Length: 291
Image 1 (spheres, one colour):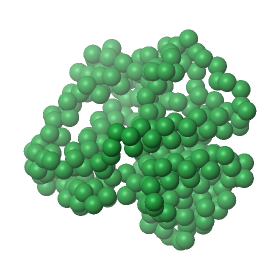
Image 2: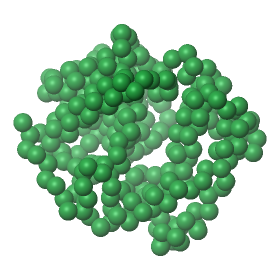
Image 3: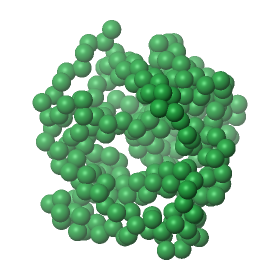
Image 4: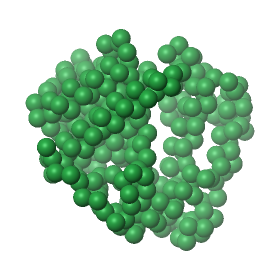
């Protein structure tokens, strides 16, 4: 067993927030071609068959069959060899001090034989979330769908059990969460202001920076260092998350969804959403209703 992680006086781990994004088992998307660079969250995937090439921060890595990849948040592109099959989990983690959960040590390739417990728990997590299915691809795994309270509780229990093994496994390899410090509290304040910013009107980022006590450029520097995103990128990610939620709920017409998110014309919203999600809002809503 790995040693318990040391507590830090800067914050309480109990206040850390999680957002579980997906668990899927399927072939990689668009095999045989490099993807574009995109922002990815924390994650772990096992290559059960085939090979994945990854480029991140100017570095290229190969994850062959029988290996796993611990992913750090940031911009990345990838190449799935034909016939590749993955078992993957993705999540976001927001510490109360605003710092990244792990400051270093991720983007790590590890043989699956060293991760038997974590691989077993990842398979169990997939079975809990996608009951009765043997294969669910990434696009299906992120679609919102109705769920009962008891099923939600069971999924949360499974995710937290998986996460405990994830943290313990990394600790056993010498990779520990970043310690808290005062700079993290500054970042937490900036994140709070960005989360309070209405999405239905253009953001006044210079004014927001002034409220946080910084210039516009310094605001982006702090966010880039802590989250790998600019203020504009953070708000765009929030807007996309809200778009997915509103479309998945299926109650509002597309024109009203567009207006709530600050688009005066529905075609502009459609073009923006398709550029970020890979399909139109109507197609996304249709898939969500069928899942």
